[in-house]
Length: 381
Image 1 (cartoon, rainbow, N blue to C red):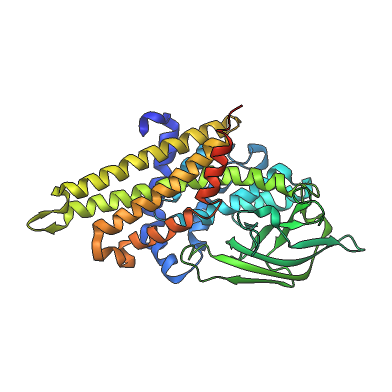
Image 2: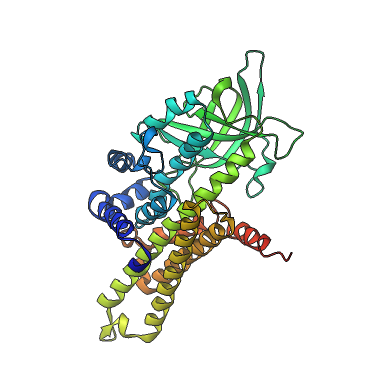
């Protein structure tokens, strides 16, 4: 894909790939998954590189990069499993919301500490009755006489919310009579009194962690609202577009590793007196996978390029997210077949890629939601 990137873009992608190979390593990512440990050490290394500030303006202490730069980083960060990439990507999405919608005081309080790796962010959208239908949010936030927010309800599937020093951007209902216009975002530190966070034993996201959150009259300062009251739906919609473009890059990075791992194994494994690679059926399976990965990568790059130019691209972003996630799932399944029984062992990594691929078609908007968005753009007239 070098022909599709500028020299500086290819250099950037190569830099992050080498960093993953030598500074993070697949063994570290595997260990975090096995032990369900948040990758604090690796997160600190990435912060020390200054990469958490990639999307921020230089005057805010950032690197002044664009969404294409960030998507290339996501591709490399996801090479050993998307769960690891999520530990970096999820906090950045919310940090960028603060950069765009935050008050001067919020920017001063949060942006530089985030860039330095001192704090993290998580986003909390879903609830037991509000998944794909996020506008059905029921968690209630009301102001009391002091001006503070009193929040009650339950949130679900909140990635990274249990990690230390994390601030949760929570979608809450501030007006019960307005479905979309009655939603707001509150910035709630995860050590706020009365906030109960449970890490769930999910199939994927072992390291970053997926949580459920309970709130029973939790008091949050009045100035914790992000943007204006009733602006939550707009913020979350824009958040998801940035998220889907970046995560699609991470899916492609992991899918490429799944294919490359299977190809290497097929060359090394001898059966019936010859390498598996010599069996045409396997070569064709892997050729299909590589073709799908290349196609997914091109869709991601197109979406990222349009987003970096400020062009409307909800259709293209959804295509990249849809095809990237489904490609990762297919490549991981094929990798399991090629590696055979060995694929079931953690040290082969393929079973982890498969587990995370299942989540990739659900989190951040299911494949069916992406198809609905794409179909809306296809209406005649």
